Amino acid sequence: MTRLEKLKLYQDEPSIEAKLSGLKEDVARTLELAKKYGATAAEAAGSIGHSLSVSVRLGNLEKVEWAVVKGITVTVYFGNRKGSASSTDRSVSHLSEMVGAACAIAKQTEPDPYAGLAEKTLLAWQYPDLDLYHPWRVAPDQAITLAKECEAVGMEWDSRIRNGEGAHLTSEEGGSVYGNSHGFVGGYPTSRHSLQCVLVAEDKGEMKRDYDYAIARDHEDLPSPQYVGIEAAKRAVLRLGARRIKTVRAPVIFSPECAGSLFGHFFGAIAGTAIYRKSSFLFDHLGKTLFPERLTIREQPHLKKELGSAPFDAEGVVTSEKDWIREGALVDYVLESYTARKLGRQTTGNAGGVFNVRVSTDPLDKAALLKAMGKGLLVTELMGPGVNKVTGDYSRGAVGFWVEDGLIAYPVEEITIAGNLKEMYKNIVWIANDVDTRSNIHTGSVMIEGMILGGII
Image (cartoon, rainbow, N blue to C red; front, side, top):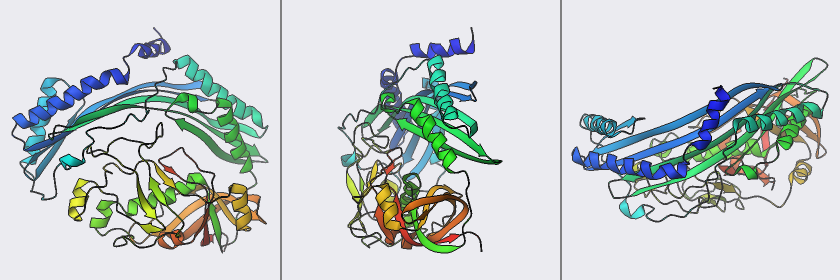
């Protein structure tokens, strides 16, 4: 039997949805074992999943991979003493060993008055079906064909596309279950499908690489492989002929793919751990105006089929729609139970992070945004970490396009963008309506005034 024939057997595997009941039973059994071992409280989380991934390059198959994920973790409490352990084997004997190990660890730790489960009244005893599970039992040979089509169309789109790093198709489905000794056990299945193409354009000895990708819960919501391949080709060709610019202070437009990271830094700065440790540039900024007054940043965790949606957080606390920024001001910190207790507040239902964030936009498209800027830099890719979470100082490498008279003039490279995030947030002028929905943070292109662009001195 060939490798591909073996991989075809996965189509006969029970669905994740069918396997969830067994995982719930194992989580409940783990909690019973913790009680038997004398723990005063316990919580357990289990996960299962599988994925098919194929990669092709220059028309040749490079990889076909079938991956299986499974595991369970338990955290036990003896008063305020806490211990954790995990296992990939869910047999009764291994679950017992895992719980015993967690209990032994807990008895050796120092008491922590803030440790413990989330409050019982805050748990998601009832939660909606968010339509997050759309399995796609794509056959390996079909997946290979789709990936090859994606790359081939991109390679043929322009004679300057002469190389590439290939096309990659992945189909994943998984499930997670959380339970604790309050009597809560909840879980749900999810799916995620993606297609990516990376191409290299070459002209007069110059080579430029770029890519495009698509991702969705439901494979029927993905664009065609041809679309992804052509977009990757367009992006690579547009980068040919890149120049360097002189060091200057100028407005910058962050494309949606890059703008998401600006708000990612914001959420990292208002995370409870950073706040109680006083290691954030937004420490002690609750209620203060950080952004222009018209700007709102809203979390909407119950939108159906969205990549960032979830009915409850990693502690079983019900998720809810809420504003993080309202009329430009900071409404709350991102908290789970532990950090909330440290700060004398209540959990916001964000153990594990934020869910489905929407940044408000202005009534203008990308072309209108370029026209509004007139002259400056459009950033399409950022490189390097370059962010100080304590001070907010920001310095990252970038590539993109120089804009003159509201139109793209030429591609640019080897640029450093510098500023301070607090000032950058205040200096947001416009946010276009070209929203990118391929990540947990949905935002359009963001224009910021007065940034320092480091180039030729």
